[in-house]
Image: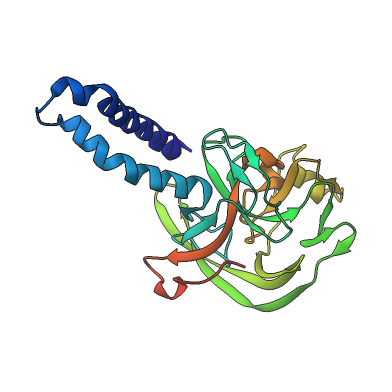
Length: 266
């Protein structure tokens, strides 16, 4: 969000200088050379405008910072997000001015983090408005139907943590990998042999207590594919519709794993 605001400010500054030059400054200086700020504004304004339009309404790149969406997305993946799938939105304000579509169960969703909207998060849409969500014995149910989840091979990965001296250390983790069917989407999830702890009153605590959760209108319930290592709706609540950014659809780069380049996101 900060980058979009920065681009908008630069766009306005260069555009205003260029317009002032056309209307007034050019006449005042007559045959004198263009000032540097006019030359730069005329050069940068079209480029900034093009990038701003593409990022705001078509496609925006993001980098995956953590392993909460493993094995679908890995830390270090550079992805593309479709910005018009869920409607065209006013930059910065993020209010919809053209309705196009709505999130579906199974979509990999980028959104503004509800507790701090300047931060972007990525999770999978599990519950739509009105859906009833249950999560018992690490099996997800939507509207009373338990989702199919077929076991696959184990998934081993490295997690960086802090030791007692606050030094970084790598921990090898072995998780169970399942293929889950969510709506029309088949995707992989990871399950760990541990019991998650949630703050009292959180959605996660209610689900752990065996309660069902109803997604309110205008909101979505989102979870990470790395189910036991994800800060998601179970921790901080539902995702409001006005926080939606777009749908992740493509991995365009990864500096450490070239084989991931060009993969579509399921």
